[in-house]
Image (cartoon, rainbow, N blue to C red; front, side, top):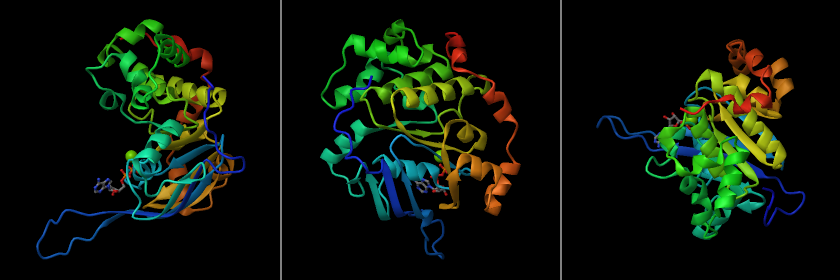
Length: 286
Ligand code: ADP
Ligand code: MG
């Protein structure tokens, strides 16, 4: 699984974001009022080092998904710049986008809407490789399925034949197919039953470890970020209001907004910390 190609020059950051803003044009609701843009991001800057697990937390609507879409080339910043492995991706062209797809892959919140229901798992998992003109052998697909804790015979089935947790495992297998260096996850367990969240989280953490990936992990749930990340940025209203090692930010928050978020954490952290990798394969087929 570790056939990384064309790695970054040593010393470069995995991701470097500088003063990124993103304005969305609001649809005009009244003829009397000029439509002011929605400022989804208001000057966001941070670096992520290779191999780091970087978390972004903040309430719904604070701009997390907008930021991830820009990082992964699905959207463009209104101003500012973004580098991935030292390459400027702020104004992507097709060839760079193909390169970015190989180096950086995404896992979305809802595996049901991000997996094509008409495609067999084998084709879903192989899709990124096919898109890059590389193709995927049967053995490679089975290896990927195994890596995410699914049986090889899952390859011949369709997404609806799996549970939510298993579907997210399929998304993860697909994300790993192109042997990316960076995994970007947007609320990857938020749509799952509480009972399987810890398993999928542990799977992500184990794979990031095993494959030496850089992780950018977004969640509105602080306990989830604490469980998998080394460093965390707290976002509020399109800005990072606090950033630091998870232990510092969680145990000694400086910004009033961070304190407010932490005060609202349920006790899920305790439940999560009791779960080990051995629990991974306990999910039964739907
Ligand atoms: P989060 O992922 O943190 O919940 P988003 O990045 O989805 O936040 O949204 C940030 C802000 O930008 C919100 O106010 C949202 O309504 C707005 N927004 C997001 N996408 C669009 C869009 N395509 N068009 C207009 N406004 C958008
Ligand atoms: Mg979001």
